[in-house]
Length: 176
Image 1 (spheres, rainbow, N blue to C red):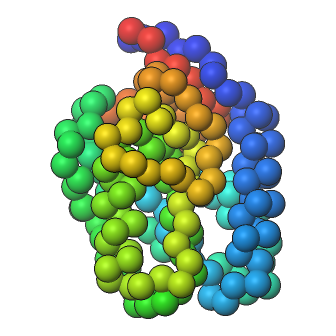
Image 2: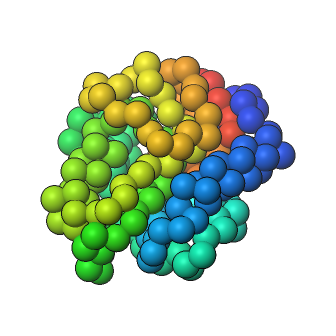
Image 3: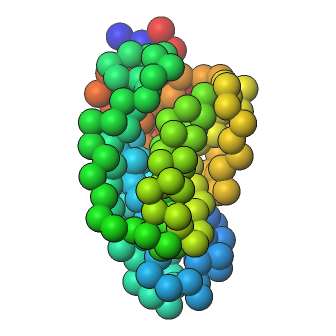
């Protein structure tokens, strides 16, 4: 078993989520029928905490999808898997996608393109807990970023190592 080295404490994460919540609330405040789509499983902790911070005139509709380019591996396969991509009619809605991490950009770009083609959203923005620009293979700049990190393998706060460690309330570097 590897070692865990704390990168961001639970308190630091909560503070950053509050800041992002304020920013997103300002951008979406006057928009009708906002929808937040969580990309499972990794985004669950970030999504839950972020939703508690969103203050808008209209209440948010919550939806989920399950997408992955990792599967049970530590490296992206390069192919986006869509085990659950069932959404209601979101035609011309105001959409916020919430991701756990954007590294290569493949999964996020795939999903943003899918939403544009299927639903022609009025607003389409993406929030990610973590951004790893050094790993990008597709040009993608998230609208809201919790933290930008180097090319590290991290776990906790919803992120996993082969489906383990998601429950850790802080973000840790996993070292072999």
